[in-house]
Length: 346
Image: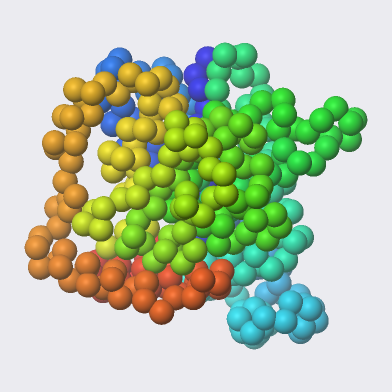
């Protein structure tokens, strides 16, 4: 039976099948670079997209129609940012598809309201549980999480390995831990509540066998409060924990925060599949071939690249180390994309 790879998305609205473009990219890489060649990806792996964005959309719609509760809720939370959010909802006739509300609402409610965090963890946990049912004893399951999804994956896994089952027979997670947790643009430390991400069970030897994290120095989201090994007390052995710090010059598109961009880099994708399969799944010859063909700048022309680099350098300036800075960082990325691509899609 194929090993299962769960993919968790970041902020914003995601439709059914959101993961297909990322899966296609991983398939193409394995078909051209793996030891077994074309077709082995589909024989070896089953990819499952986890979607929890509908929960926030439903919640936003509910709050927009229950205006009598808005003031009380804003008073309980107390944050000025949330009060502005909820005030907008109270004064709106419909839920608009706008960046601030499809991104900020998710983060604010998840970070500040325990009931929302619990609902998200339950929804994600049920999808994970359903996906690993019936796996052969020798089959593995792993998680690739992106951005906001890294915090959701962290919190869900920690709950799995800490909360006892009703029958008293240990925890849900103890029955079968994921082989690999791959955190891409890792914000689990930035959005942490309790426990701290560095003190939780989500580390090798506890809630997973291997833990990989990817960080880009020009991605405003990852630079606010980065998940770096120097800040992890008693980090696991190098073969169990791997950090990919991507080059400053690795810029292939305006949306530098994009999951697919991270997964194209050889320092991310090659260790990823060697861990998911076996050490020689990507041979040294294939690695050398991929690195030789790999272009840090993709198809970007020099003037566009220079302009983009300058904008990205400025994008991370002045951000605080508080979780609310995520909203500013995402908005800056959006503005850069709109300027260089001429659209406003996220």
